Length: 483
Figure 1 (cartoon, helix red, strand yellow):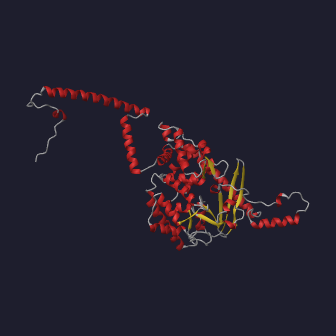
Figure 2: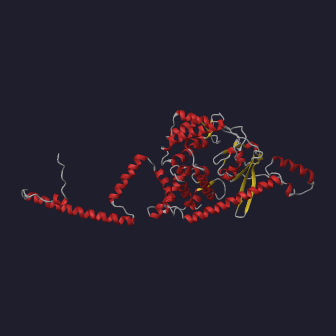
Figure 3: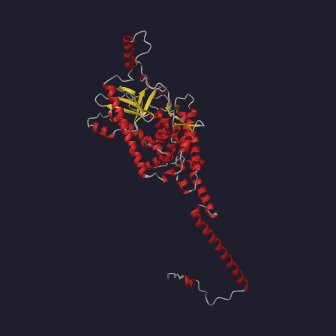
């Protein structure tokens, strides 16, 4: 079969000679068609010109608006996002316009210098406490002081000398336990540890106080319950557990709970590596069990990842409020049925096998109740410590009175949307972006006029799920809060 030949355009437009002449009727139709074509071309040219101008003035032609609605409708059908989800995702716009690199580098250098200075001050205080005098939080010290008072203070004294007065750590109860700045030390020669709190009042006044007295401690929860703390137990993300009743000097807000749980957010890796040796104690059976535990949680988190796609803020903040409503006793503990119901309500169902495996790991005490914060972190996962450090920085900047809760009015004053990508491009105003943020944040709050640290972290935990790069997430926090 011969191949078809394709004529040039000029040849295709030629009229064959053997065609009959057109009648008057078809001449009239052709004339009408020609007029309509010209008019259509003129309208098309005008629309095209308007579209060109819209690139400068950010106006949209009717056709573009229709197309945009179609795209939004299609996206809504595929993603099933709510208005709250879309407003929450607006916060990602800060990552599109990162802060000035030089300014960010200078700020980072200043933070490093301040952190090193803080560690040096705490280390000096530790040396003073353990080499030259008794530790403030040592229970035996009070006994010694009372003895001295009875031996040396005259009955008619109007005032006890300063050196003999009882000193109590944390006399006032504040609600910022989640944001306490603690620095711990582990002594390999006797396997003991101590933890200090660095506190700053104003610009020039600082104080360093012992939080956990120097002693040998053991795990109180988990696979290693009852085992003494060793060098291998210290890494970023590890949780140290203590019995609150063993530490009389702790704040009352902490002593209300059976266990004091401290999360390691940073570690001196150089010092740690220098202390590790080949002869370090091995606990292969526990290491294998903990590895298997992580695999169980990872499998569940992978299943739920798609369900959390672009809905992280709504689901995480919603879960937080839902758990609080179920917690009638106010101790942060719920039973298995409560957790199953919560997963069903938020469409986060997992297989019965996976749920039971996770429950066996989380309910390590076998009392049938689990802390809902731990449950949420195990089932859904959590952002890394680098990201959390900036969430804490932002909240502590807002929490002027160090109470653990921030009034919405303070957040409105401090939140700055000038550098949001949509504000810079002119698509949104600063007030629109700020209002979107506040509306989505308020959904997380149990009180309409204030935000707790846990609620603040839940919001950014949900936002973090969609952001792969750590620096993008940090930019989203640095830019509006100026940290």
